[in-house]
Structure formats: structure tokens, C-alpha cells
Image (cartoon, rainbow, N blue to C red; front, side, top):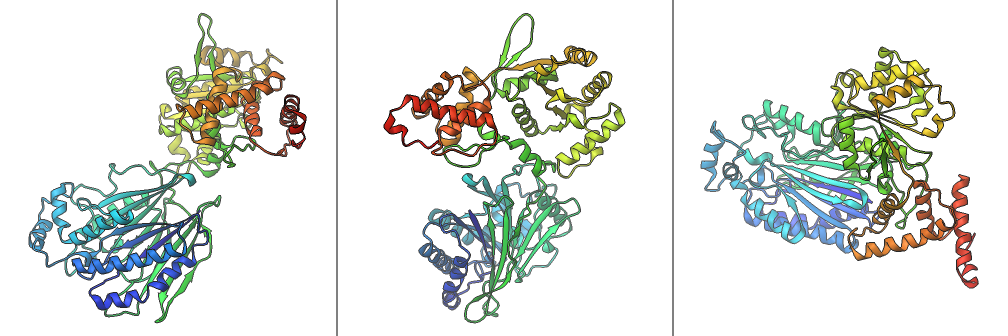
Length: 628
């Protein structure tokens, strides 16, 4: 998938003469855009205009602007019917009608010390001289699905989601010209009043798959001192791409701040000005989404008197999103990959590579208790239980899903704004508290962006979660192992370890003190084999991922029954060992038309056994069509 962010600004249409000039340039504008549409069935054009549509905010000027923009869109659609076009508009100072009857009252309001932009009526009065822009935006919203600013707020958030590619675009449309005057002064524009901040807690959190495109007409240099501080707080927290106009010069700069926040700052040349008609240009920022590391390429076009010619072509390079997310602390990319790694390649019906969260079916866990038996079959109840017990040892045989469960617990605790961390037990070679502080501090630095070891170690224990997989591989002595666990339970609010308890039987006297401490301090949960409800959860997740069906629909129920029937054939031959890995492999192979290369011998055995079973249950004629 490719995204083309077409950035037009400062069109300044005043009269029919301007319209005639621009209509003659439309073929070149549209043609330049079409040049960069190289995947016509999977391309989306974000048609972003950062203000000054009109020369003086008059109604007839927007009629002309509508004709120009529609002609550009029609040209694109004519050449590439499948391409999506998504217009996004913000107003500029030339979109204000300063001859409007409300202007005098507006000037008084702007000068008032009691001006409160949180009051919708006051904001609508301030934006009343932009009424023709808002009417134009509403008309284009009805006809073309355009997104634009609301007339009662400075910042409006519009969303555009491409769920198939896990891309969510958030347009932060900032109306900097709400306080414009006929003769503007640099350093006087405002985006806050009083204690009202642009980077308010009322703004929604930024998700990992979000790309925030901030659109504003005036560059930050036009803001006054206090507002510039508010801008810095805002854009470091949210903006991936910043589009501005007004200054009539093209520029694309990647700005990296001292705190590692990063923004792509793009200024646009004016598209047209009656007094200087040959200074004309626009920008295109192209993003290639399907790459593992998203790629970008930036182009600037300028009018040469005949056509628009390309003046800047950066070539493809990695697109660096702003690293500041939510609280400013996010997981590193390699940690996310580890959390989502299944450990082996499987393909479901829609032929895409799967992540662990796509196919994870919650296991059945049994609490080890003397008087009564308690089972857990969903994440919500397990996490409530862990919150109460604090320290948990999860036991299970090899490939029963211990690692997958710990990874999902990591994801859930991270969503709850706790700070989970995985420790590699094979790299713990000391029980000294200061050495462990250094090891765990470094592990946090290796796990999260924008953190320091000191900051993480100083957090309250209830904010931190420690997870250790394969605890049976511990390399400390018995006394040191106990001391290590005592350290963990004093520093972390929650500690979860997983163990293959069968390995403990090989030499049960090796870790007497450690095992006694676990028995007295930790609650034991045992993962059960993949039978009945555990199987059902895995199969249901598989069908949801591949088919996208509602779990409560008759179609879903029919699919599930069909899967059970196919899997039952394999289970009758005792080829299924009761592990989630086996079940996923069976589900994957049942949907493939040809044998997939497998290195792990047991997986091959499962598949070959399935083929033999099928050969025994179908007619000879059909059997000849199966390739083994």
C-alpha cells in the first residue's frame, strides 16, 4: 500500500482571471500527482490543503476553488479509478472576511481578558469571519467526504483508518487564523488562552499504529512566547508530520529534539498569487506502507512557465515516526517483534504471516490446591487473581504454551500502563542486590524507549512486573537462587515465572531452599493439555483471524464444526500430542494445497501422518490428486 500526501497551500483565488490561470495548470498538477501513483489498486491520496484557499474569504471565491480542486480529483480518478482520495482542509488568514459585519464585535472579544476558547459561543464569534470556509468544508464533506476544522475549537481531530494495513491516520487540524487580523504581526498569533493548553489531557492518546499529521496555516514562528511553549509541548508529544503554509517557501526538514522526539516538518510553496503568478508549487510526501520499515520519499514541484517540474526528489529512506507515545515510554521495535513472534511460520486461509496475538488461544490453568480445584480460562480472571496473589509460578510441560502466555501477560500489563520486563534466567549469574540493580536497570533500557535505568529502578514496586520464562534453566546455587527470588519479590509488585516441572524431577534435591521459598511465597498454576475448551479457544481464534466472522453467527459455528471434524481425523490416529503448537500446525496444514518445507521433524511427522490418514479415508481416484 502507498500513501500520497499531496500538500497544497495558499491558492489565493480572487476572481475569474485567477480561476482561468489555475484551470490551465490543472493537467500538470494532476499529472504530477498521478506520476507517483505506482500501485493503482492499493494507493490512497491524502489531499491536504493548509489554508488561504481564497483571497479574502468571499463566497464566490470558494465556488472557483471548488472547481479547481474537483478538476484535479477528477483527473486522478479518470486515470486511476480505484485510488481513494481523501481531502483535508484548514483555513488561513486569507480565508477571513474582514469586511464581515461581525468583525468589530470579534475584535473586541479578541482583546477581552475574559476570552475563553473553551466556550463554544465565544469561539464561534472569533471564527465567524471564516463562515464561507466552513460552508465550503461542509459542502465538500457531503460530496467528497472531506475532513476540516470545526468552527468552535482551535484543534479538530479527524481520523482515517486503513485497518487492513494497521494504519490509522489522525489529522490534527489547527485553526491558527481564528485570531487573525488584517495586518498580522509575527510573534502575536495565539493557540491558547489563559490556562487552556493545546496539549491538553483531553486529547486522545496516540496509538502505536497512529500517524499524526498536524496541519496548520501559520508556522510556529508566528506564535507568541507562551503559545510557542504550548506548541513545543504539543508537537513533541503527538506530531509525526507537520504541514504548514503561509510563508510561501518549500521546505522539508526532519527535526530531532534532545529528548529523541522526531517530526517531519513540511512547509508549502504558494500555489498561486495574482501579483506573482509564476511563483507556484506544491509538495508530495509518499509513504510505502508494506515495507517492514516504512519508507518515505519527498517531492517538490515548481512552475516553470509551462509545466510543474520536480525540484526535489529525496529518494526512498526510512520514515521515522515520532518516538514519543502516550506517557513518552514505549517498547522498542525488537521487543514488540519478540512479543508477537510465534516461534515458527504458519499460514492461515488469508495467506498472511501471523502474529502470536492473532492465534493465541488462552490456555486452561489449574490452581494447585489441596482442598478444591480452581480453573482459569480467560485473561481477565487470571489477571485479577495475579493482582491478588502477586507472585505466581506457571508450570507446564514442553510446548504447552508457557512462553506464549507470558508474552500475552506482558502485553496486557503494558496496556495497563505498568512496566513489565522479561529477564533471561540464563544470564543471571549473581544474587548480589547491587549487581541485580544494574542488570535489571539495563534490561529496562533495552526494553523501552526514552527511559533511564535510574528512573525505572526508582518507580514504586506496584508499577513494575517481572516475567521469567524457563526458570528451570537457572544457573545459580540453591542459596543464591533463593536470594535472587527474595530480591525480585521485594522489588516488583508482580513476579511471574514459568517452569517445566518435569525437569525438576531429574534432581529434586538440587534446589531445596529455592523450591521451599517458591512453595511458601508463590502460587502454583499448572497449564493443562490442549483439550476441550482450550482447543475450542484456539480454533475460534484461528477462524476469526482467517475468516473475519462474528463468533456468534451461524456461519462461524458451521466453520468451527467443520474444523473439529477435520482435526478429529488426525486425533483418532494419535498423531496429536495435546499441545497448542500441534493444533496450530494441523490447522495450518489443513488449509494448504501443497507441502510446506518444515525443518522440525515432529512437524513433518504430523503433516505426513495427516496425509496418510486422508489417503485411508478417501477414494483411490481422489487420492491420486494428492501430492506428498
